[in-house]
Length: 192
Ligand SMILES: *[C@@H]1O[C@H](CO)[C@@H](O)[C@H](O)[C@H]1NC(C)=O
Ligand SMILES: *[C@@H]1O[C@H](CO)[C@@H](O)[C@H](O)[C@H]1NC(C)=O
Image (tube, rainbow, N blue to C red):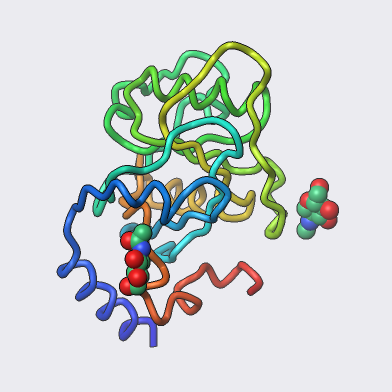
């Protein structure tokens, strides 16, 4: 079953192109969920659901067929990013807490990151999508900022640690309405 799905996915991937689509901004816009797929490591090769920030951050104007998802150091992104060089041009995974969502996103943007995923620090919470809102400061950011369930963030982090990998390879955003078996490709630990 898994092999079949993976093979099928691979075909889709081969057919895929990096497309610049202005209409992505409306099609996959603010307040809708946005999806990304982990290509490697394989044990977390699922399509994940993320919630774009409510009132800050940019939208994806480009599909990244293959881009790194890099764990930030420190994980909460509330101090100077020690691995900033690896975040440049990639997507960063951060943890909630310690400082505002916006200041985390801003720090990633300053490091040259393309987008930021902020995972809930409630690791066992597999259902709550927090609405990320701005923090009332004059700070702004123009990169997409997405909220990820605590369970999903934990599973991604754990897999990378087990494989001693500094990053995962992902596709983002993924248009799930064009994928018939989308539901089967969601993480098995998520209830749906
Ligand atoms: C997730 O968080 C929400 C809001 O804090 C809470 O109502 C819910 O019970 C939590 N779920 C779990 C599994 O912890
Ligand atoms: C997503 O895919 C569907 C079905 O193939 C298509 O109709 C829709 O335009 C696509 N949306 C975007 C934003 O590309």
